[in-house]
Amino acid sequence: MDGAAKYFFARHTGTPVINRLRPIFRTAPIILAVAMLTLAGGWFGHVLGTRMRISSDRAAITSYSDQLLAHAIDVIAETNGAIDAANASPQDFCSPAEIELMRNMLFAARNLKDIGRIKDGHLICSTILGKTDGSVPMPQGPYTQLADGTRIYPDTPLAVSDSNAPVVDRGNANAVIDPRAFDTLKDPPFHYGIFYGDVGKKHLARIFGEGDAVVPAPADGVAWSLKSGILRRDGCSEASGLCISVWARLSELDAFSHGIVNAIMLLGAALGALGGLTWVNFRRRDQSLMARLSRALAHEELTLLYQPVVNVADGKIVGAEALVRWQSNESKGDFVPPDVFIAIAEQKGIAGRVTRYVLNRAIEEMAETLRLHDGFRITINIVASDLSDPKFFAALDDGLRRGGLSPRQIGIELTERSTADSSAAIEGIARLRSRGHIVYLDDFGTGYSSLSYLGELDVDVLKMDRAFTRTVGTDAVTVSIVPQIIDMAIKHNLSILVEGIETAAQATYFRNLPVPVMGQGWYYGKPVSAAALTKQLEQQDGIVAVKKGRKRSRQSLRKTGSSR
Ligand SMILES: Nc1nc2c(ncn2[C@@H]2O[C@H](COP(=O)(O)O[C@H]3[C@@H](O)[C@H](n4cnc5c(=O)[nH]c(N)nc54)O[C@@H]3COP(=O)(O)O)[C@@H](O)[C@H]2O)c(=O)[nH]1
Image 1 (cartoon, rainbow, N blue to C red):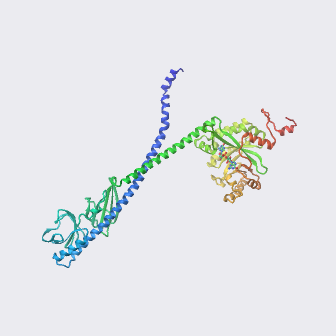
Image 2: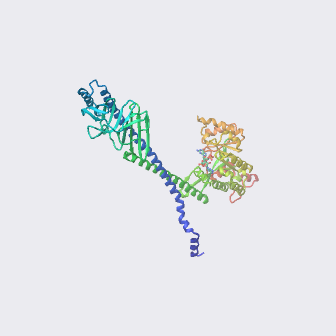
Image 3: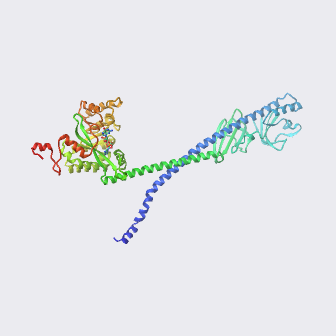
């Protein structure tokens, strides 16, 4: 295809467009997720901030309401006191002596404007007017009458001036409350209404405050409401006969609390964004690790080390565990620990590729040694998914055939974790054993299964986790579990491989057990290369491979009497 044809083909199949859109498809969901988390964080911050702000606004309103109530109690006490004293006056009705008496009472009061005597709906005398001609009528406006005969006239035009004030009368006396009695307590943006009367029967008159005719709801207590951006508190006290309503527009309340809400909202948004970016970062890191691992497998960058397994009785090597190593070429030769990349490979579904890689490589590197050392065995670690993966079983068959090995020479290690789905594990283990492989239960005792669960898993060897080995010779509580695990293995007719033997004392402890055990650990040898392990075996068994594919043992050579 020439250039023009290629261009035509590409154009008409839409490839360049898709290629150009690909980064958008890839990044759009990430941007969307981060944006959503940012918005969710902001929303959460806003809700939290608003709650905090409302609770602080409530505290401010409550404190203001308490001040008003305390003052209202004084005002009402003075009013009632003056009316009662006038009614009980020992002087002649509206005599100069009685007017003098009332004037003295007025001077002593701080919140009253006038005190008077009334008869037949007319003011007969008062502290300000003195004795009238009897033609001054009592206020004609609406009033609230209480059970004891008290009448409350809210905001009444006064006879003595052109101002309005609340007037209370009872019996033959009345008192005019100073209309500015609450002026010193005015505190914008708070608004208030002060009601007096019979709280229990909700028979109340507004004596002060703004023209909100709504009578507070609670008989004795407090009610809050938030409507149309107005926060309102209605509080009543039956004992004083007073109800105080205080309200304020949220938008006018303390600018500082607005600042707090905004700050918390921004903090929430920032935390949401941070969470989103961290998630993206982890995802990218996992994905890039995954992509690198995939390339490393394709380029055969992963290597193997082999850790000797010995017969504890005489220290002779009877096997080795293949352990994968990854020195990533792409990140300046960084070592990535196997438990890290195996876990991610398992999550992303490519752990099976690692298992098959390790199996193939181990057979490639160790087949000759395995053929020469009859009782010697290499074990490989597998993951849960391998137990039901046909590719794994095919790779086993293929590897054994290529290496000319018997299945007993390739042992399979699976962890307690991979046996958690017990029915698949039981089936997989049975399949491996029926093919002649020796199956090891790794990390035994670390928690995924109980000791009794062992009976269900038909394995050959129990690998006791090094967490228990470490306790030998110490006072750790778990040391008591070691004999229990050994007993359990004996009871189930299992061989025992003790992991992590690091000291001579530990080696002695396991050597002195009543049953023979295998051991693995730094005391016997750290993981080494295939060549180093082969050398150790050659030294141990006196067997060497003859170069260029002619493989014979010294022993067999000695037996046939031939020399090199
Ligand atoms: N599925 C696969 N899992 C694998 C493979 N290769 C390794 N692994 C698993 O990764 C985990 C870590 O392994 P590693 O870092 O290789 O550590 C092994 C030994 O080096 C270490 N060890 C051995 N002896 C001692 C000792 O005396 N002290 C001590 N502190 N550590 C010691 O133990 C690890 C082997 O453990 P185990 O497998 O339980 O026998 C580990 O879980 C590996 O299984 C792989 O190819 N596939």
